[in-house]
Image (cartoon, rainbow, N blue to C red; front, side):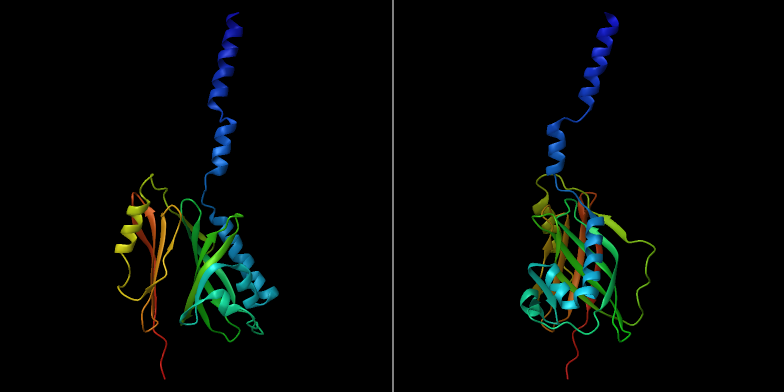
Length: 233
């Protein structure tokens, strides 16, 4: 009898330690970061540019309301509509990805190469859609005199999950830390406010940006950069 009671107690303890259907369902519903999926999407995007054409790929992977710089900011879907693909598409490779805690927004940075031998870098913002797929919302880059050195593997950095009610304060912290004042802002903010990319275009069309992540209870700088104003004749 005592053996039966002991076995019953062990069984109950095991059941109590195992997550129930409700717990498993809650985890499925909780948004999570998935930087590997962002990298896979970036690589698929790069392959599509080679297989289907550069601007075709940009159209196919663009989210509604996406923005690109030519060098002035333009609505990407309008600018790309019916635009002919170049004979040889640019090639690119992601080097690093930053993700919000909830995975709603991510930023990739990497290197590109053109057929004419020029090299540069790119920064792309990826937004998770309702179907779970990622589409780009902002894309920009510039030429580099010295090509970026390719890493052994794509680096990843995921923001800490903020506690409930912190979103407004985190966004306020990020806005107070803009790289410049004035100009036109193209803010990219994750749903949980754990990732904030503030992107500023000055009247002379120079561009300035800062990427911030939530770490240890506050927003910290993760990446920043500038693109000089285009030359005028």
